[in-house]
Image (cartoon, rainbow, N blue to C red; front, side, top):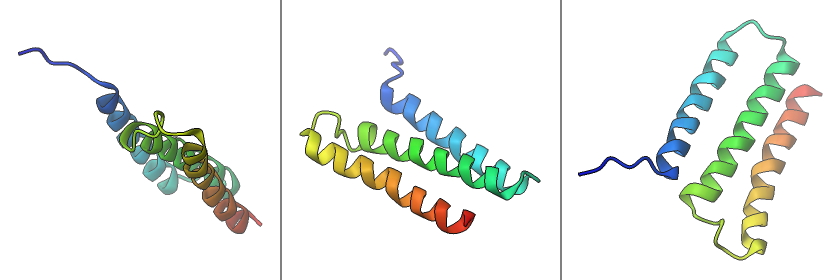
Length: 85
């Protein structure tokens, strides 16, 4: 039986690494503004991976894919603006 590493496995590893990086950043002494930007970027990348890989919306009509991807970008952006300002 062959062991095949698929896109799902790679995405899972990236999601776990981004989560560990976010936790490490939250406990570090980085300036709050930079912390918000880095964690927000991490959330955007994680959301995009979930939408495309696990929800398999890369095959869906563009309208649905862009709707969910815009949600993934807008919500963290709004939260970052609230925290940063």
